[in-house]
Length: 149
Image 1 (cartoon, one colour):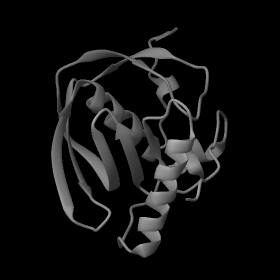
Image 2 (cartoon, helix red, strand yellow):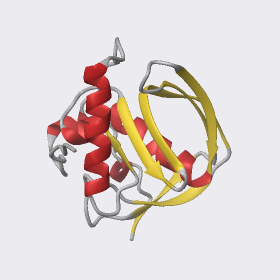
Image 3 (cartoon, helix red, strand yellow):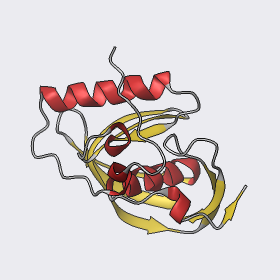
């Protein structure tokens, strides 16, 4: 088990765009495993993007509800509906706010073995995927908050 240091608040890496992963190899699998370990060791965590642990790679891990996902180069290729969400973020502890997100998203990604995935999620998982994929683009949820709670 290896955990990585979380990045917080005004750390400039949170605003940088992550680079696509060109090959899913043992090094990438180890990073994904380290990210999952970090997620599990952090209270109240549901998901984590690579730049939240200081890496500018397009990687996301999710352990939320009944989903356990390790995603390489995820991108939203479709969305529909609208929902009001309550969000927080491990990189912005003690900040919670309302956001407006798609109710349903379709995501294309690679799994930890480089196999292509295509899936559609709704409600809470749609919110989670939007939040994490935006991290990879250097966007943070506090910019989308319509009301802080």
